[in-house]
Amino acid sequence: MKSLFDQETHAEIQSRIGNLSANSTPHWGRMTVGQMCTHCQMPLELSMQQRELRAKKPGFMKRLIFKLYKPLMYNDKPWSKNLPTVGDFVVTETKDVEKEKAKLSSLVTEFHTKKDTSEWPAHPMFGKFTHEQWGKMQYKHLDHHLTQFGV
Image 1 (cartoon, rainbow, N blue to C red):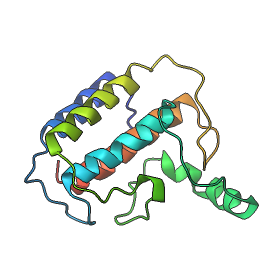
Image 2 (spheres, rainbow, N blue to C red):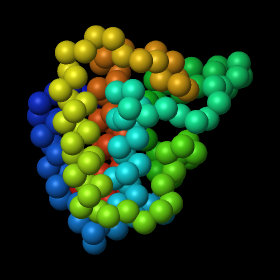
Image 3 (cartoon, rainbow, N blue to C red):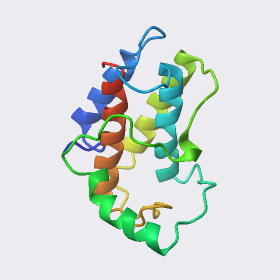
C-alpha cells in the first residue's frame, strides 16, 4: 500500500489534484469536485490536530465495530463506492474549485512533511494508528476520491 509519506506518492497525489477542474464530474456519489476537495481536507486536518470532530465518542459496541473495520482504513483493498461519510465530513455548500484544490494541495504537502513524526494523535473514532497506518490511510482516502473523479 502506498503512503502519503513517500516522495513518489506525494508527487502522484499532487499531480492528480492538479488534474481536477471545475468540469470534473464524479463516477459515483453526489459531491461536486469542490465539495470533494473540501471533504478530503478534513481527515488531513484531523490527523494534524487542526480539526476536531463534533460527534460524540463512540460507545462500547461502536468501538468494537470500529476495531473490526480499522484495518480496512489502511490495507491494500480499495474502499467500496458510496461508503457512508461521518457527519462532520459531509460538505453540502457550493465550493470554489480552485481555492479548495489549492488548500487541499497545501494540506497534502504539510502532512507529507510530517514523515519523520513518530507521535500521532488518536483518531476520535478508531483510536491509535501508527505512523505507517496514518500515511497509508491518508493516501487511501485521497486515492478513493480522486478515482471517484477520474484522476
